[in-house]
Length: 272
Image (tube, rainbow, N blue to C red; front, top):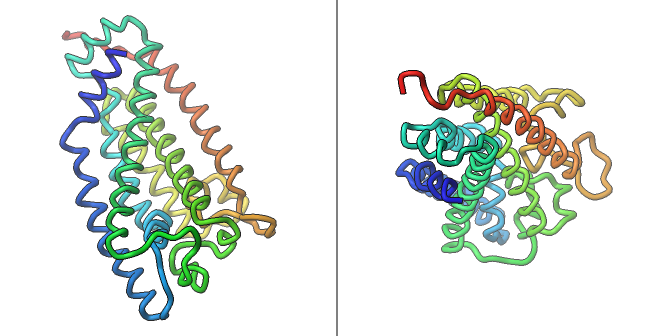
């Protein structure tokens, strides 16, 4: 437990974790302004849910901004400094070391998701109300708010929970990918590059409109909420539980591979 607290202090309580604040504030300002303009032009009411879906359902924002920023924040969490190596000796178990890294990654995903969602929600509160249902603007023009019309068959609160669950599982899986390549190469840039390649491969598949069922293999199909089927409507898109299974499979494979790499990792360099 002490080693986990040490990891939190060394890996999370750093200045770089302030970077999402101005980034998401700027995004919120632009996106919420667009929500207000559309609502005014259509003469329909909007609410704060519209802002959340407009940000976290936007594929361009996810793949060009939020994913790369997250990868940067977690890219060097898996290498140990000199002090970290001494702490590892005190731990005396690679299994506990690996478990602490997985837990700190999960905490990083929780903090990143909570920080982004919290800032967007608080910013939207100043100009948009909170309702228990979909807004008039979304009901009339859902696609302009990055929503699949079929998603309106479930409540807005259920929809945002599913959306954030998909994003969190996706970010956790991408973090594990970074961890595996970092341990394999003993260099954080290799892990970061692997994460970036995975991210932009999903973007390419999204832009190329990869045909089904090949699209099921790409992360974009399971990361973006609006690329799913809802209710009893028959569509070629995967269901929400299918994407959950996809990310669980990703996590399971990467956890096993990363654990194998951790057992072979030379934590104490020869010159030390």
